[in-house]
Image (cartoon, rainbow, N blue to C red; front, top):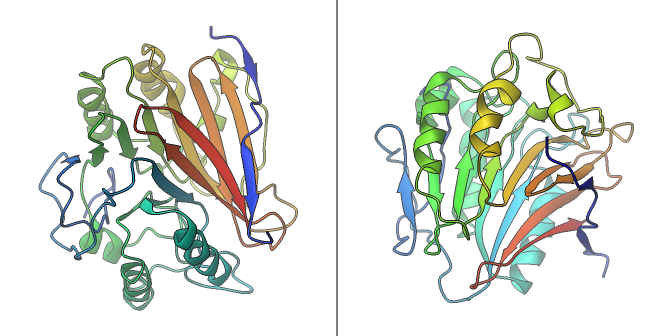
Length: 298
């Protein structure tokens, strides 16, 4: 069992100063310093956006529960879009990871609007779908059975679909994770993006994590794959592993942030919509490999 469990005090900033698998909607046409892998053919829907290669320091934004709250929004929380615009003027954002519930109901009209808004940012983006995002149109339009991105320094970014019974990943995703982890070097970090806080499932006695209430327990029922199937693949590594989930903060009764650490494994969750503690996270990645996770309030 890993020890040294605790909270590390993430830096906080404010602007007041076609299948259920690993899902891709990553708009990127020119990414020469990155390697893109998928279980099958990559989606064909792309824009002219490309990774920012000018800055030696890379900034990756992670945003959870992005539609906000059904009483004040239905697709891409307006305060988040505004905050992202402000942040992007200060730091060159190299990638945007939306950790689910991007829309309240998954319709073509709403996804077309999401695409048009995010395309204007000029930033490559990827979705780890939430229970609100799942629909035949979503999978037909976006689907891919496996998706990962590797930076020029070999850091691995995995976008997973846990919006399945038991907050689980299927066997194809497990096989894909295995293959992607196989050739990691010790200095390379792994970043894993999901919607659900899938580590909350039974089995957490392997690491005693704090309990936290998510926005929703939709799809909770069913066998979980995290602790018994997925976790052993990561637990065997000496690399720094970062798990990010995005189902918090839709209501002021629900926390909007979670952070906990155990050895080389780091658990984060975030969200927005309540207007109290709305936030997104940023991976600040130095050229020499140093990783800093920042919380940005708005």
